Image 1 (cartoon, helix red, strand yellow):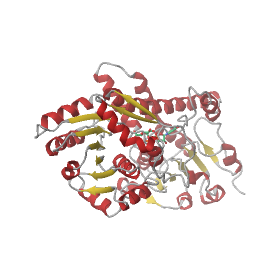
Image 2 (cartoon, rainbow, N blue to C red; image 1 turned 180 degrees about the horizontal axis):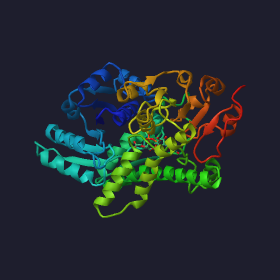
Image 3 (cartoon, rainbow, N blue to C red; image 1 turned 60 degrees about the vertical axis):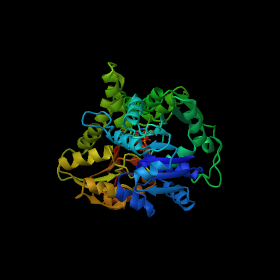
Image 4 (tube, rainbow, N blue to C red; image 1 turned 120 degrees about the vertical axis):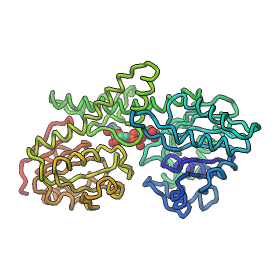
Length: 458
Ligand code: UGA
């Protein structure tokens, strides 16, 4: 089966590369000419662990190619994955104009029947609109289209592993033939017949993924429902953290014990600065709008969103409480990306924190293992360094804003000696309060008993 992937952003690149690595013939295209040109010479525009390995070997083995001409890419394909962006509009709804453009192009250029798959995150009923657009704009009455929804559940930073080892593959279909084609596409993944670039020499034993067949509307809803629930869980943990601060509990202990109940689960109960990125915040917003639009008040999600937006304020309150006057204070920032193992800073809480610190007149120095170049585009005049110790040098406070593993293993004694005042505000509850106290830090985190500096001289 010949596959086309339209949209060479993060989802399109991971989907196209992994399906090619699983044995399919894939042509990937995008209306961003320079992006395709750099992909053709092996330059990947995003940082995603292991993507380079899968992409390079798929290209080398002739199963993946990048085509600048979208129409040409579609001609050859039996199945087209739409992976274009659906960013939020001013009012919070998903902007579907890129989907609409692709639909019109497919309708205009197709000379043979196609299965058109929504991979982008879209609101429920987009499938209906897509089907209509394909019918209305087709120039060739002999060509028929089937539409399906196949939402992705990839996490940035572990997307390649997630693609090869999914816990579920959801396909929303209307015809048995669409289900058959999608089963065939995912057969190598379901049967474990692929070379996994993440686990060498072999993958750990894992349960087989569930292949879940639903209606198109259900599949669309599943994606929004899953991301929104994850956001809900994080906000719940964050309110628990606030409560622990008032009542003297420790949120780590509370969420650990609560999460041991398999009905609840331990994941996504880490309190701190809250969720960012281009998925959870925008999907929750779009889901609220979608519900409002059909007269359902999703107050639960509105509250989760409100709690999340407060997190940056709460962190800054902690900083202000410790520093008293913010103006002219030197602040070191550890972590800019919205989460570790990515260079993505879209809707990253750290970006908002930096913006607010600058507005308060602070001198900010920042580091991130991967995101400095992207941050430069937003804050061109900020002082950046790849060296966390340099960021700490002379600082009145150090803010830990992204849970990169390498920050845990820094030489914190050295950091303390570099700082003007050994104050650490840990927005991700990454470090151990007792250890930080022993090292002489004034250490502030979320929902855990606060540690105060005891001795900064040794
Ligand atoms: C999210 C979902 O987890 C994926 O399943 C989904 O496929 C993807 O969106 C998507 O729609 O494409 P992602 O945006 O990569 O994935 O990030 P997450 O791992 O969900 O983390 C989101 C944010 O929540 C990060 O800022 C992270 O720091 C924060 N977080 C996560 C917490 O604050 N606490 C936690 O316990 C977990």
